[in-house]
Length: 266
Image (cartoon, rainbow, N blue to C red; front, side, top):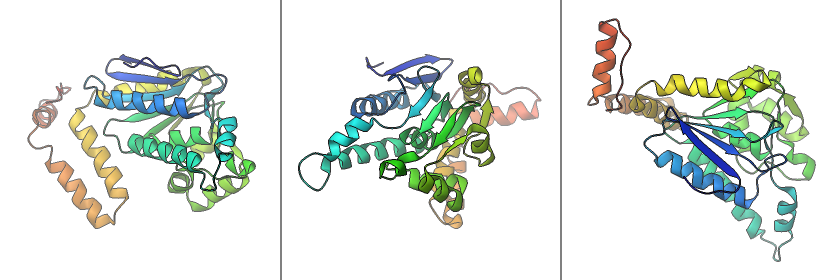
């Protein structure tokens, strides 16, 4: 694996844990984003990895937004097109799309504040496990800006248009319990149990065959972007693509023989 300053990865039981460790609050700057992208690319390309859990270093924050002094400096570059800021925005958008469209499940273990870009990262993940002490929000409006890494697009898709507008225009933070009520997170657990719960969820998923995992993620992601008729065709295509795998026969035989399937990812 890469030798990074702000990113740590470890692989156990085919589950990769990726930790963003940029004290004190794991904020995003150009180097953190570049290292995160490199790490994601390596883990997605690694055949030994079937699921990825992303979390923040320490106990206070998952990711508490972007590095504000760096944003200020980029906005003060000569010229009026804000090209430096634009490049940073577009890089983050591309990275989060890569995470969202990955065919390996990616779970956010939200161990503390998930604000701004941190919440945008969590929303790009396929599932979110949250500490009961966490606070979540898109506070960019308080800085005179708006979310730039997908917050205006993913938040309304998850919680609904009206609530997303409220959260983005007020910049208010919400509790983990409110986030769960809004379906913004999948689970809320005690603070010390977040990473274990996320890994337990990943462990349950990686016990399945990698082929239907990838097919389901493709069908869901591609289908949501299309009218339902096209989504149904995508679902059928992904279903049929599994017909030649050994694992489909193992799954059916195990069901008929009343035993646990032993998938081999073949």
